[in-house]
Length: 112
Image (cartoon, rainbow, N blue to C red):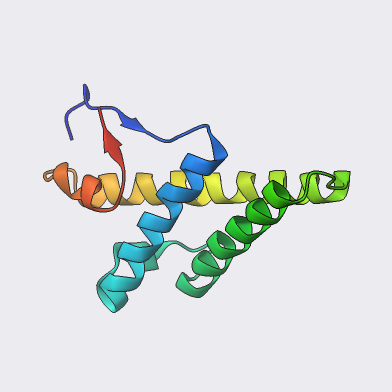
């Protein structure tokens, strides 16, 4: 992979959720051929569950102005976990597709 190529992993949690949803959709579509099956920390089902869970929690918080600190902590912990999954996915996919950088865009990553 070209060392000058940069991949952007969003800091904004809503953009991170959107990227995670794209990665998960491609992962699910690829089925048993998905390179992400090599991730040891999370299964395909858990990945989808975590994305869905965080999305639901953020929707809840958006529609309920008064959220407890526990709710905010839960969201922040899920965001942290999801960011780690996205970063691990990027590392694995960038190695898998080091000769075909465009493939990362298909997985949802923005290449700069």
